[in-house]
Length: 92
Image (cartoon, rainbow, N blue to C red; front, side, top):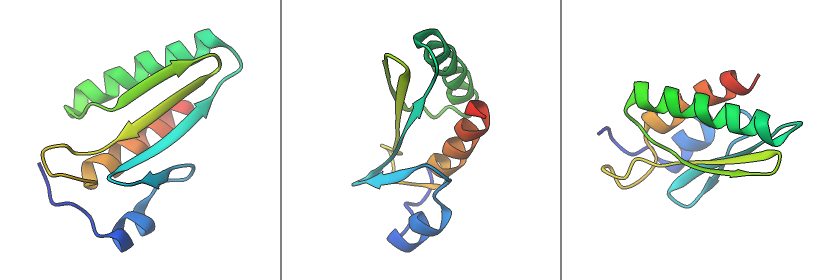
């Protein structure tokens, strides 16, 4: 599960491109085509399954919004920060 991070810890550890929205961190990734976005979402699903930490993914035309929170802990934990960083690497 993990301990929730303080506001200061979240701000200091938030990966590039991510923002905080209440008890979640989120980012919208942009792609050149719908299929690129779908491919990213599939890859994100694989990373999430590996980490046993499942984000909310919203796939739209040329965009994929990702939202992360640790429901069991009631907020943002290191698991969210770690997966966000891995998703940034996937998108690069």
